[in-house]
Length: 414
Image (cartoon, rainbow, N blue to C red; front, side):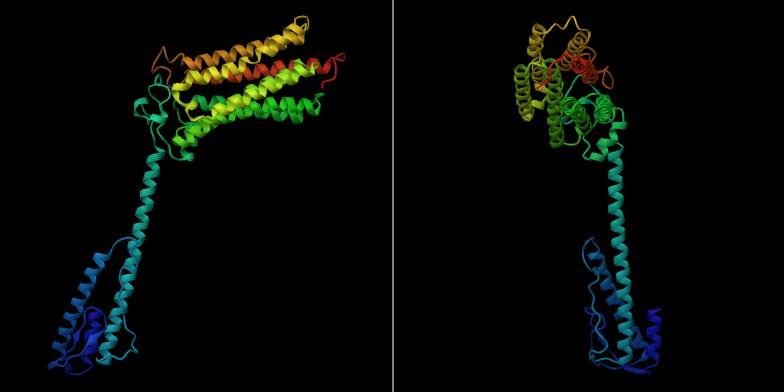
């Protein structure tokens, strides 16, 4: 269409024109040199050849510069009609129209190319995200070293998932951590609801101090189970995230042990102020020491599994000393409530110790390698026993508190 317009415009100029040589480096910028008198058809053919040659040169430049984020792919300049040029007015207008049409088309091509690259990048990101979302469980030996924890669990391990969204969606997939997540996740909800009910809704003769004592137990249970749930959910995210949440997990265990011992000390030594304070300070000091130890990076390594179990068992067994003191100084066997509370204390200790022993020795998967990859391995059993022990202990301190608060002959707690 441009060529047709060129020819019609040229024919109106007469049968003879001066031949013009077009500078190919700047569209529309010309240098006029009179060579000879020729017919309009010959002049048109010569102009057409020069224009096509200029266009080919620009198209070659376009192809060479057609790269993403390269700025303006067609840095061509068109002079303004007001600029003085040594060429015929009609031919000047013709070149200007041709230049502007070419430049507009070039910008359209540039826009299309950039859109194509944007679509390509978004499609590439979508494919990458789809592949990441469609992860499959893998064998223990295919895991990176920082995820290798229990070599008796052969298959069903999550690969590294470098997205919190992928980690949280993995709770609905079957893998070695599914049972660990849901056991303590459900336990977390149970104790959270129970604490809200007991401390805000239930009607009982509790003073503010009684609520604070039971609040310490509920806080320890909720934090322990909550930290554990988060750790097992995001442990496959990265070494840094896994290490951070493992420290929170171990700190939560220390808080649960502390929150379990303090209510029992308060109600067991209800009238014995100095033993109560002494054992409470001892328990709190041990809690701080265990938390500091839990923040040590090597404490979470698989080779330190027996060390971790021993530390928490010894911390839990620290309650034996106030328990023995209480047995000697109180006639617990003659009172039904005291007897029930002490039996609950013994059951709780047995459950905790059994769970820690199974966890440290990795039983039963040690005897059935590859058979307990998804369900009933030691860590899941340990989680179940922890929840059971916490429920039993709650029953025990509730019986003990009821005995102290309902006995009119008892002394006032100090």
